[in-house]
Amino acid sequence: KAYYEQLWADLGVDVPLHDQLIRGLAVLERRLHRKQKNRPEKMDYFNKVLNDLHGHRIAEMVEHKKQGGKVVGSYCVFIPEDMVLAADGIHVGLCAGSSFPVQEAEKVLPRNTCPLIKSSFGYKYIKACPYTEASDLIVGETTCDGKTKMFEILEDYHPTYVIEVPQRKNSRNQDVFTAELLDFKLQLENLTGNKITAENLKNATSKVENKFKALQRLFKLRQADPAPISGLDVLTITQIGFQDDVKRFTQQVNALCDELEERVRDGVGVAPKGAPRILISGSPMSLPNWRLHSMLEKAGAVVVCEESCVGTRLFSYTSEPQSDSLEDQIAAIGQRHMSINCACFTPNQGRIDDVLRMAEEYQVDGVIHYTLQFCHTFNNEGTKMEQALDTAGIPLLRVEADYSDDDSGQLKTRVEAFLELL
Ligand code: BJ8
Image 1 (cartoon, rainbow, N blue to C red):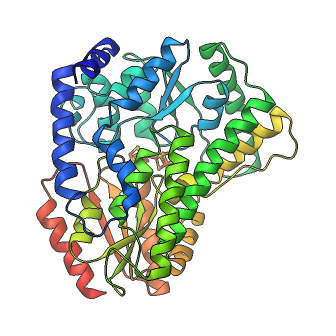
Image 2: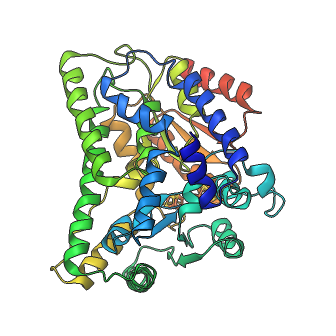
């Protein structure tokens, strides 16, 4: 522990505050994850990572930095991890899912801002996240207005670079985004001192897309009834994927899938066959935002799919360049990301179509539309989603929540009433 404390202190982390954070996380993990029954054995790896969240991986990053390497942090799936890897950097999805730094963040940001934004900024503001402190550069994006404006403030606290994400999916905007990625390439080359070449980008893309394929495999296995793994465990795995080493993570997900294939063959599940199957769609759930999954599964349901950036929006697309040229590869990466059905796009019918398709593929009994408080994009899109699911005869519950536990009682009552209707 002393070794890690020194490591965190050297990065500039407020160690006593960080201690409180880690202790809170451990309590949550014991209360939620360990209380689950009949978990796959191959969850062991992910449990260990979760229990050592700021230890081994941070040590790897520090070692990488000592060798002259750079760490690049981000908060959105629009930032291409493969481009960072191609420049021999480490990419990390930064902490943004807990209420821990929110009160402090409200000293700078308006209170009526989405908790994900307050949490992201708050971790930097109170210096409690070693991943943020280890980042040589934070890369933001102009997805929603709240984030865009927060990045202008974050610049005063941390080296920050912002990529423009257009809000319509047409060829003109596709070109804008590709041009943004070409600028990002230069930015990464300046930061790391390494050239991004056609060859190293191709290798990096193949690593990242192998991770996507492993996650696709994991999600497909959840289509079985009984579901071979809980939604809480899959959510946690996907969250860990934003921080873990790409190759190691991919191997571990595939090893878990081997075990789950056996479970499906043998009819082994985490909940009895016929338990209510739920799809959650909406704002992303960053670690440790586990409340809704846990609540649903404690009430006897099983979450079988997340239409979310910590879910299908992360890994459903791959890039297919027209040729091996660097420009074509970057254009294909741009296309891969412009395929993401984030509610920041208008119109965004693709997301509604995805949910309707997935409701069938995953044999769901009901959908929960999850919106983080003050997330206007997903909240407004919920209206169209509600109409579409109503027409298709799929029950929907709309939930708006922040990161605090204040409304847990009320949320639990609504969730249980919804499950009874199914
Ligand atoms: S691609 S969903 S990760 S932007 S929840 S900060 S939208 S007010 S996180 Fe997102 Fe990228 Fe889109 Fe995905 Fe704003 Fe909403 Fe907050 Fe959000």
